[in-house]
Image (cartoon, rainbow, N blue to C red):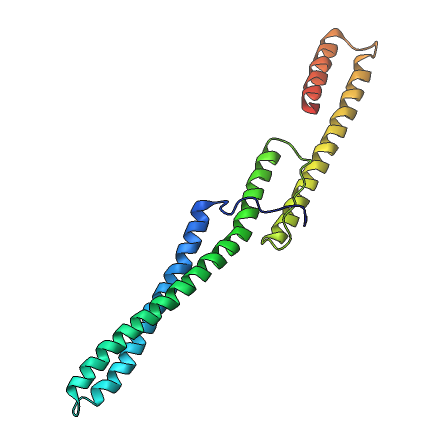
Amino acid sequence: MSNNQYQRRTVFIDKAFQGRFILGVLLLIFLSAFCSALLIYWIAGGDLQAQSNTAHMNIINTLEHLGISIFIANLVALLIAGGLAVFVALYSSHKIAGPLYRFEKLCEQVGNDQLDTITSLREGDQLQDMGKAFGGMVAKLRERKEWRLTLATKLADQLEQLQKDPALTANYAGQLGQMIETLNQLRE
């Protein structure tokens, strides 16, 4: 299931999925930064308004400076957290998008009756259990195909023996010939 020879060649495998994933993470960060700024402004503003009876001008200047400081601090934190979030989201989504892409290609191969495919995912990728289940499914399909091929061969041999029977009428011999042709088509 795991193969250390698999190396990541591209960062974006499914751009739409990974883009939505990254956008969702960034929106959460922006929302939390906005809520943080509102909360700090509300808490600090309440303290400053309590002191407004004595020094009205100092409060206004302090409130303006505090608002700018909060904005700058949140902007810096947002840029750092946003950069980290993009990196983490890209890395995390790659561990999901890569296996999904691999499964898509494996489904195409199985659909084209290539049942000798091997399901291999990189170590650390998500969906390892699904990969094992997919490999088991392909193995069972391969076994069933081989079993049906064996039965078709056996049945064709039996029909050929019956066709060689001298007591067989010409009508039945023709029908047996058609059956043998049909079985041979199944074996292809």
